[in-house]
Image 1 (cartoon, rainbow, N blue to C red):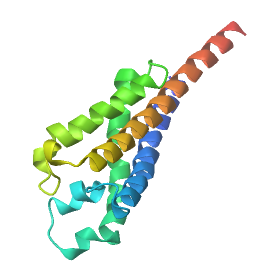
Image 2 (image 1 turned 180 degrees about the vertical axis):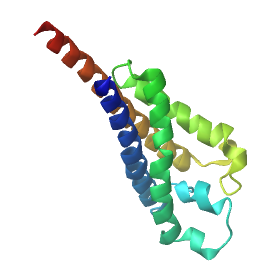
Image 3 (image 1 turned 120 degrees about the horizontal axis):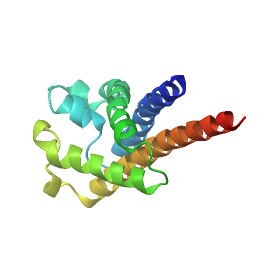
Length: 158
């Protein structure tokens, strides 16, 4: 039971680290004009008005918030897909997350253009980020789960 708890904790930590890492990449993509939206577009710009929401302060705070939000998709992946192996489950999960955020949840975010108004650069950049996040947490969680199963079998045989 302790081993499974370890996989669970590592999965949640992977969600936090993945959220922060890919939020940093998203900020760079936004400031380099690869994307018209960043995580601050969702977290701050859609709900608050002010010059500060377009600068580095909002981006920096939203990086941390995105890290904590990233724990939830990792938890869902752990609960539903931890036994799946390979790159494809994470890739599909990342695409699904992108459609949930940009398609289903879009009406919640007034600053973010609807799915059909996004330009191709924004779609390609953000979808790539979501796919990388999905593969990152997918590999991390499934590898840890598989590693724990192998270790249990080895210890049972000794």
